[in-house]
Length: 241
Image (cartoon, rainbow, N blue to C red; front, top):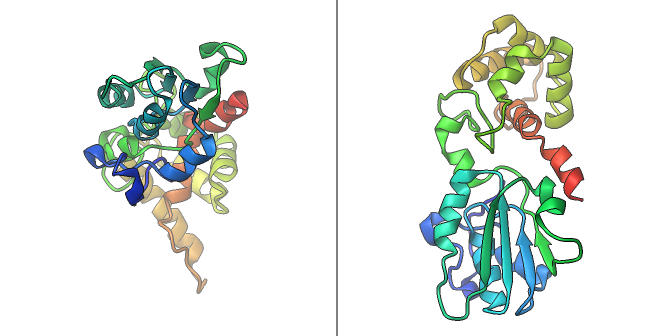
């Protein structure tokens, strides 16, 4: 998950604006070895926490390129990355997937690139977007709201075998076949609450006679699998690499 719960004091709370603390901020920026006057791409700019720290190191001669597929994140990060001093780099924000970095940046033009993978706190905490099963919402899960495929389409239109394969491959859910069968029998499934109820019922039937139970919510792996599949996260990562 692209967010953290702690911050490092010597960084002066750089990531704490709006309650957002970027994960492993100091470690990420140190390993990135940002040099003044360089050109760096934050391929998952999100709420701008890492980019803010990068911009401060680049200084006025530098160039920061921020990319994100979520327009809501870009709107927030745009406000955060406004010039804060005379010693501020050129900042460009672009609505795109990190899979398109090859098209967004010229060959051999970057001194560094950062990609903070996974769902962001903005996406996860916005119940209406359907990433979390903590609140009832439409089954969406798109990081880019302009994308065509939603989680609702996946659970209602894939055949049982395809759905089981998605849940197993991207969620490492050993009960994938039983869960897929339960989902297909319960169609149409439109909301996160409906899906959680279906998965929980299928998981309970698997636990009968077993002493050991999962320590995580029974829907966690299936929701993870759907999110990764809907957003082509592993395909995009391969394209980035």
